[in-house]
Amino acid sequence: MTEGIEKETAPGNGALTVATAPAPRTRTEQAAEKRGAALRVEGAGITFGDFRAVQNIDLDIPAGEFLCLLGPSGCGKSTLLSAMAGFIQVSEGSLTADGVPVSGPDPELGMVFQSSEALFDWMTVHQNVTFGPRMRGCSRAEQDRVADEFLGLVGLRHCADRYPGQLSGGMRQRVQIARVLANEPGVVLMDEPFGALDAQTRQVLQQETARIWRSSGCTVVFVTHDIDEAILLADRVAVMTAGPAASIKSLYTVDLPRPRDESDPAALRLRNKLREDIGEEVRKAMRDQGLDDQLDREAKGA
Ligand SMILES: Nc1ncnc2c1ncn2[C@@H]1O[C@H](COP(=O)(O)OP(=O)(O)OP(=O)(O)O)[C@@H](O)[C@H]1O
Image 1 (cartoon, rainbow, N blue to C red):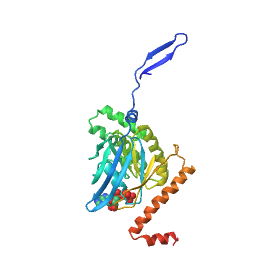
Image 2 (image 1 turned 120 degrees about the vertical axis):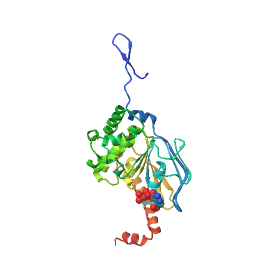
Image 3 (image 1 turned 90 degrees about the vertical axis):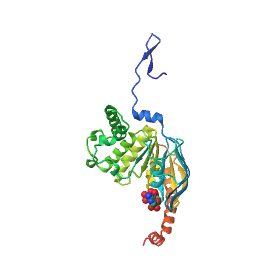
């Protein structure tokens, strides 16, 4: 049926065509139609001076996918995410978003950091969320519409006039998410966004993230240490090897119905596999750091 035309059947009069004005689409609906951007990492390596943090990274992330990145501490997850955000450049290989090389920060590539210090403390929540649209020269009315929609999406409309310092940690993370989404990015990069939050707040925000991802249609790359969080959220989980010169060790497809049930036997099996896989890399990292004696003592319960 043509958009904006509703077909009604009036009794005894056959088909009656009634023209109606098209309903205004929200930005979230527009973003969902636009879909996310596809990220492609091919043979990528990143070095800092003489130090090779990651190498031979190959990742093909289709538009709209939710990919979680897991791996031992210090293996290079944040480094890889920073390259995807355009904050640093790959030293070898290539990294593209929808076929275009990522060469610097771009509103299309939004980053949510672990620390809500990334918020502008001197700006209200409304001003934080509308920062991107303001920089793009959007009208005041458009800024208000964006704030209303994205603060609504994260349940914080009532906090528009507060300052970040007046909010809880979970509320500040919601503001960060709204601020990133207000730029309508094709890709949202999340670096342990809930790592500093208490268990209950984290659980609520995980559910909200799944809902927002579904409604926005964007591609998400989400770094976490939490295997259960990855199973709850991801379409696929990429496990990295221990660094230095870390690469992708394995990729798992999380073929479980949503919303996820962590007591599902298939989820438990996947959790065990991931624990084993990551545990192996953690042990390798500890051996490389000369911490294996401590590991042995811990294994013996000393
Ligand atoms: N700017 C930099 N200069 C030099 N080395 C760096 C820089 N940034 C990161 N590194 C090194 O690169 C490696 C990977 O760091 P990164 O922060 O990406 O690991 P991570 O997996 O995110 O760690 P964690 O899980 O503990 O947050 C580490 O050895 C780190 O010291």
